[in-house]
Length: 250
Image 1 (tube, helix red, strand yellow):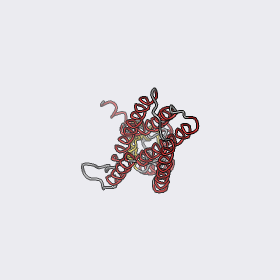
Image 2 (cartoon, rainbow, N blue to C red):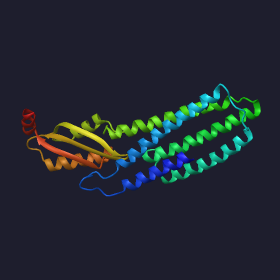
Image 3 (cartoon, rainbow, N blue to C red):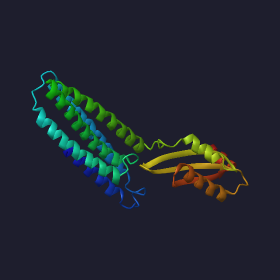
Image 4 (cartoon, rainbow, N blue to C red):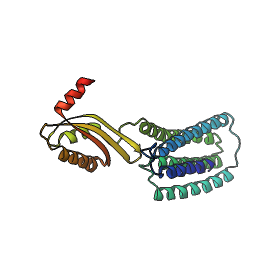
């Protein structure tokens, strides 16, 4: 429960920082605090899983006798508390698409899995006196936690490395822009996430010499927003001659 409280506090703190207005030195704002919080929460889950595996390995070869009745009772209370926390977090936050909220949710879910594992192990020990069930189930829970934690860490690193958002196909974006009448080519296309759900795009459009550049720009911005839900785009319009001149200078 202590780790859950710390994870929730970290996520709430990140949400508070992210809500601060942008400054001249932080022109994109403070949204990346959410990503950093998610990365720390994911790393903490790795540490927790490692501790679970280590403690389980100590009990595996010499499993101690456990008061299974008390163990089951405590686990049931813990499970109920975690389920209530998870329910309110799911109602108030976006646990699917917001990586920061998801990382806190996974902490609660991991604790809930631990409680389920403890209940299962307690029942096996109560019915069959099989005390090795505790470390075995603990390792299974740790593996499940590791799997979820790795997903959060990989997602956070992808955002921090300014990778293309997972739900967006860069080639499809390029073809959507080329389909605009008057556009001949697209280059220097960059798409990245500032934080979960806040994607940005920059690119250069090579257009025909006599094209209406303002109309093309309006169409490009609208298509990017309508098709890919990207509301922050910076697009440079250039003619073929200007593009060739710029290329010759490099």
